[in-house]
Image 1 (cartoon, rainbow, N blue to C red):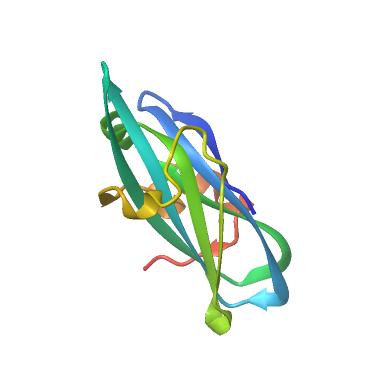
Image 2 (cartoon, one colour):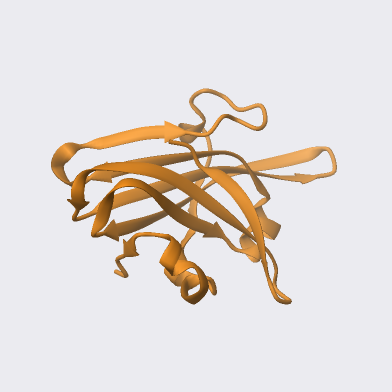
Length: 146
């Protein structure tokens, strides 16, 4: 499984970054699959750079067997404040079967233990907290609004 960023813009609001996480489900129907995203972002200002980790999660329900696609977003203000992702790690968990961890290849120089090296903040949004909910929700499994 990998996740890839994909830029989308919303009229007049600047660029949104869509984080896609393809995954496979093996039971006929999964009652719940939780995805958690950690995005190591970097903001460069002159010769200085600041790194932070942004976190977000989404819970899908009634997930059919086979290929599925999870999605989370980084809004324009978050990108402007904290910078663009260097690496994205997605952790998936299904019921009591445990969790599987997978991540994208680094697009910059990052330490192997990067998840424990930087400040953790919220900032990655599930689709129901974005303007894309009514346009794109049919592309993804049913999501649970807490």
